[in-house]
Amino acid sequence: MAFVILGAAAGGGSAFFVQLFPLLLIFVVFYFFLIRPQQKRAKEHEAKIAAVQKNDDVVTAGGLMGKVTKVADDHVEVEIAPNVRVKAVKSTIANVQPRNAKAAND
Image 1 (cartoon, rainbow, N blue to C red):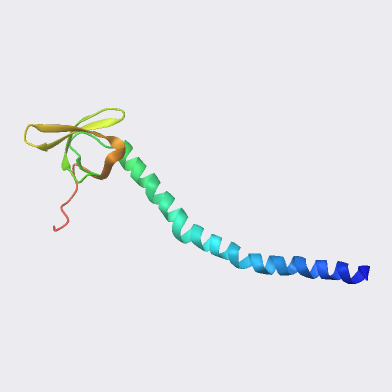
Image 2 (image 1 turned 135 degrees about the horizontal axis):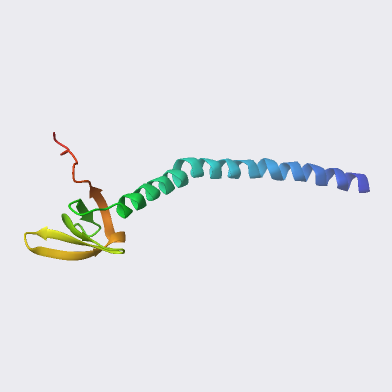
């Protein structure tokens, strides 16, 4: 009787790993196709924001487009119209176009 119980426990352990394998496979797929690319994009965006300079064209998360006139540690001053300047927190900048960027339709 004791031998049967030990045999059942050994079989149950391998069944557990067989059931766990698809979950691990799903996690690996999610990591390589979703999590890792998102982290890469976040790092690239962070680097873009850190490298913002005067005269760069920026788009804020609120949709304001303008040219950077002053850069500070945590915010930038953006000219959105002639003689209209606003301060924007760097983390709210959605996109940065460098000064020498070529237009999309050229």
